Image (cartoon, rainbow, N blue to C red):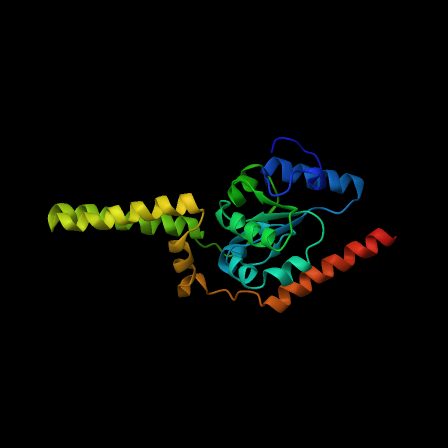
Length: 215
């Protein structure tokens, strides 16, 4: 998107670039109106490392399992955030399936928002899941090619399999390797929020909006 029109008038389901999201928040601050809800769907470790100030943490796995409950507590426009946009788009599709059509995906994810000068809260640093995927995929391809040259040509099948997997990941906008890595212990050092905590936070925001409109 290239305009700074309010998210209420923006086409449903579109991506929103970082400059646009920042402009929405600046406009809301000037007018005293409510800002678009920012929902971060990354893992707890990633969220703790860095997140947009004021964003709500709703891990993708939790959102996928409790989509209707979460959607019922989302009022007004929402911008979905992950590291690059892939998981945010998956979240948008889950929400759209429940009839929630005013969700946007932050184009370029947290990296783009940081580059655009958005306000970021930083904590304990850890590798983003997408970076881990690139490392593992690259290492497996390199291992397959090296083994194919030094051990057996059949080992090159590993590199081909990884390439096919990455191609499918791009076409389907999913990432099986990322989902597998997210389950590893070092990616689960920080406890994921319970669905009750998430719903309570969303419920509190909704009640705040109701009180503000009644003033």
